[in-house]
Length: 482
Ligand SMILES: *[C@@H]1O[C@H](CO)[C@@H](O)[C@H](O)[C@H]1NC(C)=O
Ligand SMILES: *[C@@H]1O[C@H](CO)[C@@H](O)[C@H](O)[C@H]1NC(C)=O
Ligand SMILES: *[C@@H]1O[C@H](CO)[C@@H](O)[C@H](O)[C@H]1NC(C)=O
Ligand SMILES: *[C@@H]1O[C@H](CO)[C@@H](O)[C@H](O)[C@H]1NC(C)=O
Ligand SMILES: *[C@@H]1O[C@H](CO)[C@@H](O)[C@H](O)[C@H]1NC(C)=O
Ligand SMILES: *[C@@H]1O[C@H](CO)[C@@H](O)[C@H](O)[C@H]1NC(C)=O
Ligand SMILES: *[C@@H]1O[C@H](CO)[C@@H](O)[C@H](O)[C@H]1NC(C)=O
Ligand SMILES: *[C@@H]1O[C@H](CO)[C@@H](O)[C@H](O)[C@H]1NC(C)=O
Ligand SMILES: *[C@@H]1O[C@H](CO)[C@@H](O)[C@H](O)[C@H]1NC(C)=O
Image 1 (cartoon, rainbow, N blue to C red):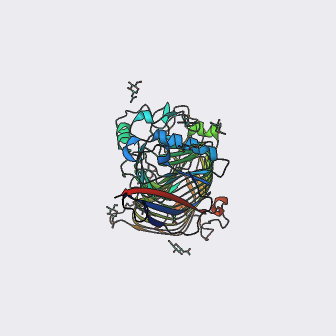
Image 2: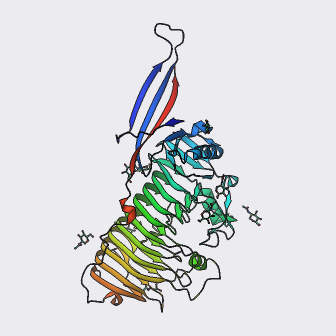
Image 3: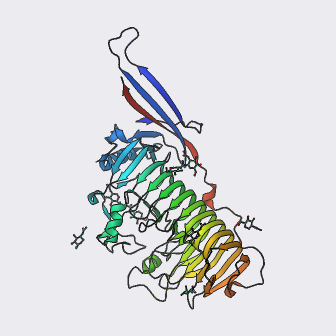
């Protein structure tokens, strides 16, 4: 255990190699050299920690075969004693660290060295069961239980999961296979889930092949997610990238996501369970996202949105070979709302739909949903969009007797595929306006009186002002050399 209370200023990775020659001058009896490599890494974080430890201090073995579940649990429970004494950082050094699910603690940083790979165990007994989420009322794959996520935290304050682009490999293939064969009695684990928590950072990591969703903050506030590379096969089931769910004050920046489901899916609970729980997702900022997802959305709002989604801002969004841009998904029975959504500067290439809203998504938690619970969709703003190689410009499908209102689309240039569909703007039960949009939008969006661009707020969301500190992580690697 060492102390690193004085973070260094430098931003570069310094590797200081020192050769310690053991054995005193002139005496040539012992000729043993030990090389100590001191790897010092500066990293940005919401909090730096006074105490630091390495997984190997707690019996961790990075051979890719030995389970480290107990080592993680032992390490984190030991380091939890520093919560009120400057906090602690657990470093995962180079190696392949097989592990089942483990729980985090408060005032804690998990740091993955660039050559560290966490490998998720395939042994179901390494994954404890949790009760279903109250705002969902059931597990998504199976009604009764759900497996705890690989990295799990609940009721925490001030947690950082980061690294110098180390890797977490969910080894999801066996789970996808069981899911497809309908062999699961419990809902697949997520890669990272943080519940009922505040001050959370998840950053600078490569996450691959999650069994299901990758990053799931739920019932939490003040969450910063940045610098994640998230990769899963584009045909893998439900491998959503980042799913902020019933969260307030969330900032997602500089992420690159290739997945088999929505790159980002904003949620807030499902049908009667989500309505009753009543916790919205709000004050969400998404910036500089790149998405590849041929069968899903760049950013989905829903379909589980029964607690409401409001005040979302998304800008500088790139999508390539993706089904749609920012898509609203909802249904009769969801209740809740999606409102005050602001999107600007999307650059899209090879898209089935640029704009897509679906009021008939279906997919209910159970038969107990209330057919009178209609979602309210209003004030949805898109501006400054270019899209190339597009099949359909828009499919905007509101709900009969529950129109989607206040849709505003401005400064949009869409180029179509070689064989475009005839009906480019297919609109039902929607209201709103368009300005400077090609190809020509549908009549329902031709309200002409206002000619100004769609709004994007000038003020800042509170989470935008949170600054990261520069912390330093030092790792001694000893290598015997003769
Ligand atoms: C766990 O914490 C105690 C202090 O309470 C410390 O003495 C001990 O060395 C720690 N265990 C390990 C394996 O580092
Ligand atoms: C992790 O937290 C969950 C939820 O509080 C709990 O059920 C589980 O037993 C914890 N696991 C460990 C290993 O402490
Ligand atoms: C976590 O917080 C929630 C909401 O405040 C509460 O209902 C729950 O009992 C807490 N769980 C634990 C393990 O403290
Ligand atoms: C992190 O690693 C991934 C996978 O190797 C790579 O694609 C990505 O560019 C890296 N990110 C940074 C910031 O180096
Ligand atoms: C799932 O439950 C069924 C019936 O309860 C049981 O026969 C089956 O073995 C279980 N499968 C697994 C993978 O636990
Ligand atoms: C972490 O990612 C950000 C981009 O979000 C990048 O600017 C920063 O240099 C990265 N830091 C490290 C230590 O890799
Ligand atoms: C229209 O959008 C493009 C990006 O697609 C942007 O470069 C341009 O500045 C916008 N024009 C106006 C008037 O905002
Ligand atoms: C355009 O989109 C079609 C699918 O509609 C795809 O097959 C083709 O490769 C794309 N072309 C380019 C140049 O990206
Ligand atoms: C237009 O949209 C409606 C509702 O989404 C759909 O049922 C219909 O098939 C679409 N029509 C065309 C020609 O794409």
